Image 1: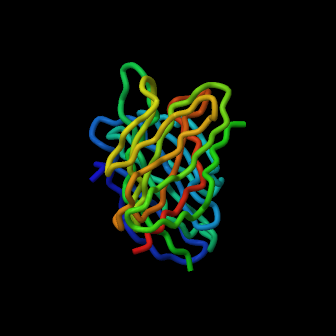
Image 2: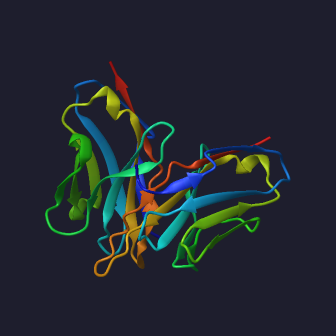
Length: 116
Length: 114
């Protein structure tokens, strides 16, 4: 158990719909990362938040948005869903570091989104 | 641009045989290096990492990797494969401009033959 919790584990929805994926990082971790994993694209970094603020953006579509709340949980919002958005969405958190940063990530078990 | 190359999207070995998964990176600055493993229907978990110090690092489940700066490689090995090692393995390195950002390889699926 990594300590990172993601809900829901599975989600089936239709094209054009909107969904919200939720992530609770490990206790004490300030950074949250969102990744998308699909068969054709592999593991793609979407976005990172640190202590409530956006820190880095990756290949995140404009239809997608995220935020991190004061209690450090994060939500990834996916709207106007298309068939190609079907994928596993992972959340990861990284440890607070007072000194050297190592880039180590702890992943949740993912939310599997199926768009029909 | 930095990149991580994992040679072979699928590697098949017999149970008890040597496992060798290859990872090469391109970076102007020696990065931190990681191997993550993803078992079926699970998230990724850290197998091992190299930050500084000894270039041969040991991880969980009997895996180890050696950082070779001159070859820009970080290959993952295990002397004797077990059926439970069947999984997908990802190599990742830190970006040269941010130790919080990782650049990922495409992954190698390890298949263990009985």
